[in-house]
Length: 382
Image (cartoon, rainbow, N blue to C red; front, side, top):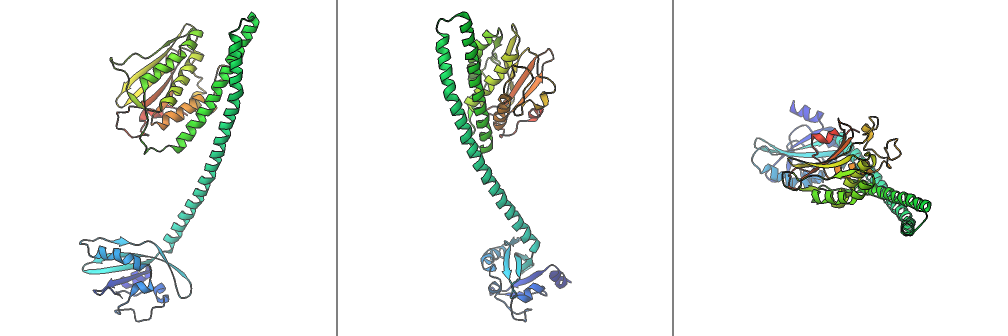
């Protein structure tokens, strides 16, 4: 019965003798008969590694398995053997011990070989695709930086000229026109920065290696600088900008983030709030402490986000119909950056009216791995 089963499974069962040679213990499968080994096979010692050269590499590992107490077994890699009539045999060997007998079972497994070859071929194809995409990304990287450089150069000259004109005594109408041009040029500079920041964030997300030691930033210092830089903007719009009070007498802790990028994210959220906040209202920046996390909220008393926009709010180039809406890149870039740090970003409509944007960042002293943004990370609807 066992002999018929071995033949049906295309298996050759060999027993190792004390002198290192092998004998065939079951009826050999048909493929073994075409290897050019002269009969008889049963009970005649064979130097099997001469007929199957791949066993020369595998036999030392098999010897260690046979000399180990217990039911340890080891398996070889797949090997291609040619028969006398030039047919390929895809074989693998298994060394095991049955009772006191060390056995070597050699199995023909064409299906496994073809599956491995298919996987290898697919891996090669994916590598080619990856290399092609990498070259394309590099070309776009150069193109974007060239565009930004070419746009920034003339714009800086325009800003310089407008600033000098604004300092001179001009007729009222001319001064007003210079003011309008200066604001437009400053806005253009912000758009260029948004494009570069978004592209940089996308590249960083693709190249990120979470095995590296993460960067940390002082959340309190970053918020203080962002708020301080935007106080003049708030005053010009007649909006009161409130910073976060200290929590329980202690300043917020260090968080996992890149300090420069975090400053841009917070500035973007606060600028958006100031843009839509009506005069004589407040924009509040709050910090809430959570176990292992820090949550920052930016709240305004404006019209809020239209329900039709909310599901797509943090996608690329999504913007409202309001003329004051931005390019649709700021929130997208913020999402990429925050999620890369293992955090989350979201929006909530305030019951009393207005918008509330929040980001949730890991505390630097928390032992939670990157990517564990928690259940609240699902609050962002896309």
